[in-house]
Image (cartoon, rainbow, N blue to C red; front, side):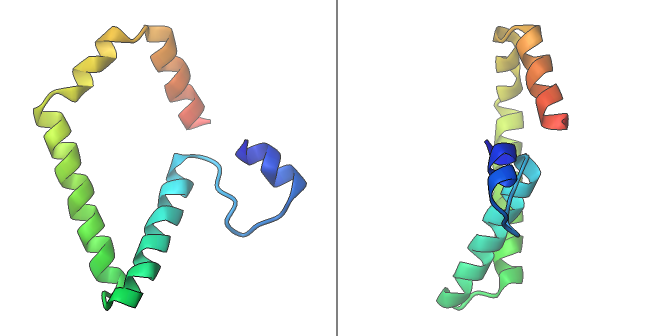
Length: 84
Protein backbone atom coordinates (compact mmCIF):
# COMPACT_ATOMS: atom_id res chain seq x y z
CA UNK A 1 0.00 0.00 0.00
CA UNK A 2 2.84 2.38 0.80
CA UNK A 3 4.54 1.71 -2.52
CA UNK A 4 1.31 2.21 -4.49
CA UNK A 5 0.65 5.45 -2.61
CA UNK A 6 4.14 6.71 -3.42
CA UNK A 7 3.49 6.17 -7.13
CA UNK A 8 0.36 8.34 -7.14
CA UNK A 9 1.31 11.13 -4.75
CA UNK A 10 4.41 12.76 -3.35
CA UNK A 11 5.21 13.27 0.31
CA UNK A 12 8.33 13.89 2.35
CA UNK A 13 6.84 11.56 4.96
CA UNK A 14 6.14 8.55 2.74
CA UNK A 15 7.20 5.55 4.80
CA UNK A 16 7.74 2.10 3.38
CA UNK A 17 8.83 -0.48 5.93
CA UNK A 18 8.66 -0.90 9.68
CA UNK A 19 11.77 1.16 10.51
CA UNK A 20 10.63 4.27 8.68
CA UNK A 21 7.17 4.08 10.18
CA UNK A 22 8.58 3.71 13.68
CA UNK A 23 10.85 6.71 13.15
CA UNK A 24 7.90 8.86 12.10
CA UNK A 25 5.89 7.77 15.17
CA UNK A 26 8.78 8.60 17.49
CA UNK A 27 9.38 11.98 15.85
CA UNK A 28 5.68 12.85 16.06
CA UNK A 29 5.50 11.82 19.72
CA UNK A 30 8.64 13.77 20.59
CA UNK A 31 7.41 16.87 18.78
CA UNK A 32 3.94 16.78 20.34
CA UNK A 33 5.40 16.29 23.83
CA UNK A 34 7.02 19.72 23.53
CA UNK A 35 3.56 21.19 24.13
CA UNK A 36 3.58 19.46 27.53
CA UNK A 37 6.94 20.94 28.47
CA UNK A 38 9.17 17.99 27.66
CA UNK A 39 12.15 18.26 25.36
CA UNK A 40 12.36 15.88 22.41
CA UNK A 41 15.48 14.33 23.94
CA UNK A 42 13.61 13.52 27.17
CA UNK A 43 10.81 11.88 25.20
CA UNK A 44 13.26 9.87 23.08
CA UNK A 45 15.04 8.61 26.21
CA UNK A 46 11.71 7.69 27.82
CA UNK A 47 10.58 5.83 24.71
CA UNK A 48 13.91 3.99 24.48
CA UNK A 49 13.63 2.79 28.08
CA UNK A 50 9.98 1.86 27.63
CA UNK A 51 10.68 -0.20 24.51
CA UNK A 52 13.63 -1.83 26.28
CA UNK A 53 11.47 -2.82 29.24
CA UNK A 54 8.80 -4.30 26.96
CA UNK A 55 11.43 -6.29 25.06
CA UNK A 56 13.03 -7.47 28.30
CA UNK A 57 9.64 -8.59 29.64
CA UNK A 58 8.87 -10.41 26.39
CA UNK A 59 12.25 -12.14 26.55
CA UNK A 60 11.82 -13.20 30.16
CA UNK A 61 8.31 -14.48 29.42
CA UNK A 62 9.73 -16.37 26.42
CA UNK A 63 7.18 -14.89 24.04
CA UNK A 64 9.47 -15.89 21.16
CA UNK A 65 8.46 -19.51 21.72
CA UNK A 66 5.10 -18.67 20.13
CA UNK A 67 6.81 -18.81 16.73
CA UNK A 68 7.00 -22.60 17.16
CA UNK A 69 3.27 -22.69 16.43
CA UNK A 70 3.62 -20.77 13.16
CA UNK A 71 4.69 -22.67 10.04
CA UNK A 72 8.29 -22.14 8.96
CA UNK A 73 7.27 -20.90 5.50
CA UNK A 74 5.17 -18.11 7.04
CA UNK A 75 8.02 -16.99 9.31
CA UNK A 76 10.51 -17.03 6.42
CA UNK A 77 8.11 -15.16 4.14
CA UNK A 78 7.44 -12.51 6.78
CA UNK A 79 11.15 -12.08 7.53
CA UNK A 80 11.96 -11.82 3.83
CA UNK A 81 9.23 -9.22 3.30
CA UNK A 82 10.62 -7.11 6.15
CA UNK A 83 14.09 -7.34 4.61
CA UNK A 84 12.85 -6.31 1.18
